[in-house]
Image (cartoon, rainbow, N blue to C red; front, side, top):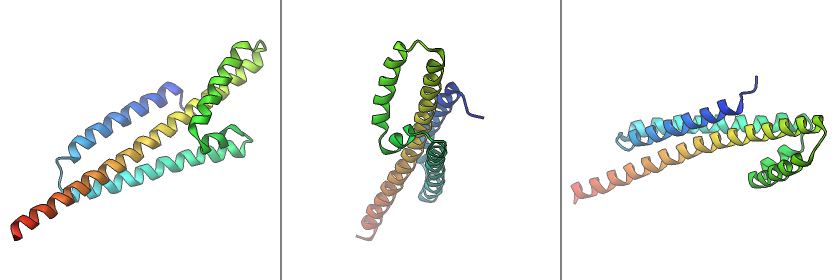
Length: 147
């Protein structure tokens, strides 16, 4: 069953808050723990990206041409959404309005999934950066002790 948009946004919010907490903790952890966090972040980011890819493939397989545009560039989809919203305001036919609503909800749901994948990729990049900084500091410290 597809999650409601409010549930997806709640999930995104929780993930962003968890990332903030994890980054604060990671900055105080040792190298081994950072390596483990980075591996977990890589697996999570990969899983999120794979989920988005599966959504795109499923939509494409169902005959939706809009998903290909999202895959190519999310910004182009946002323009299409704005256009569709203005066209929807002029639509009188109830079935057309219903289809527009479903399309817009699908697009919004995909955008939220995309944002979740971006948060997961950001987490991986942050942990990589923290680990690199810890390594650099360790190298500096070892040079001072051997000098």
